[in-house]
Length: 420
Image (cartoon, rainbow, N blue to C red; front, top):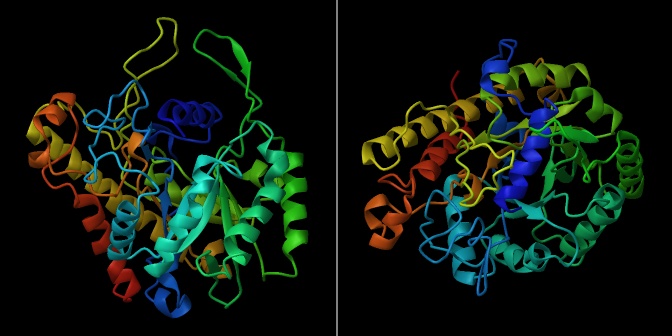
């Protein structure tokens, strides 16, 4: 999703109370220490760590890199210049490098942003799956709101994905997630699922939300999907990107999966307890925060407001190297905090996931460069060209610090070295 559109959707969630700033968080319940037996409960544990992955980039012609009036190749639509430069999502060289980085991180799967049958992103899937398969990685899908009526197409979309990228390929790369009891099935997540039918802008004008899908329509779709697949898998897990527990239940989703990097990890315990009370599964992400690229042209009567850097860091001056290092240190704190919080929530024996043998950690993100959340290595600050330095990128001195830190957190979990 272009950065302007992604902010549009995050705005819906914020106004609906579904994305909460740190100042609005409840203290939440205390969480038990993480379990140390995850590898024994989940023999395919690495596949339960899943990178959010975006196959929407193009290089000839440029696609996504030129959003927000940017002029590639030196001036691209991100605050962090990628180590690989403005690559193409179908480039074999880029995909091979991506797969190697994912494997090195300890994660075992990627979750593709998907925009409907025959979309640009859909046309890249087989190529991506071929490369991921060759590196022992699995692939699943994050269904985006690619059309106003996508809620009516949910069943047909999921069946298409299973047929095209599961059955047609002999199930060589599609993620079929195993629970602790050995039962297995695919897992799908939606973005922009639980929205309000209307919003009010900064001028007090009300607008219909065209992507809104009513709860009863979601319920019909989720019910029909389970009926269609009940002979094929032990279960299918359908997750909504929402913390509105009541509406998630009414819509028939199996659980919640917070996508955004704005919701504070301090809230994970509270939401996990609420989900448990409603019998829902939950997945909270490990994330690197939020540093969205700003538009260069803003209409005078626009309601646009610059998004704050998350995690909160007062008084940053991005032109100063020491300030970029300070920001990187805060991002490291955010990665550690969100990783610990999701691990604690998902291994607490009093909560739904541990009771039902479900464990799933999304990592946001591998390469959502527009939002500044990428774990994919960026270029070291000292390696930026003169033309790139003029743009004012936020790259710190070590461009791979995020994925290196993630590796140091995931690997001990895979080898039972988690400590309270």
